[in-house]
Image (tube, rainbow, N blue to C red; front, side):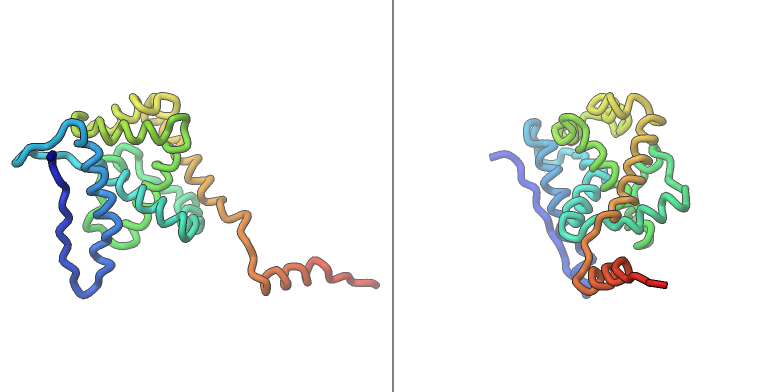
Length: 194
């Protein structure tokens, strides 16, 4: 009973192009958004915003590989963050790999910022549930679900920028290999006696 979400994938010469993990996240979010309302055959449906999908995929990858702080450092150094409204309503599909990687990193940063708020994960879940009836107004949903950090676009832009800076500084406490530890200790323990 109910509806089903089906993923049809054609694997070509490069299986990475399919990005199966992203397709599965899209399907899960779509099912979650329409779980209570349901979808009848022929009904037009609205998927969760791209930045939620890509942000989730990037956060999953960061669990395995860690945060790419160099990418965030470059974003901060360039000081060319896109306006939040453009970022939220844009779509990186069809853009070059570098731009796509930056947009995915920005999406992960925004999603992590939202998730770290009180009841943040529940707020994101309610956003996904509310999305089909939202008429695509992302800022209205953010104001509704995250009033502390998103009372207006400028305030959310500031919080997002601060979180980007936090991601850029995330490598301050990284582990060292045995060789790196030996090299650092040798430099610290070298004593010159005149």
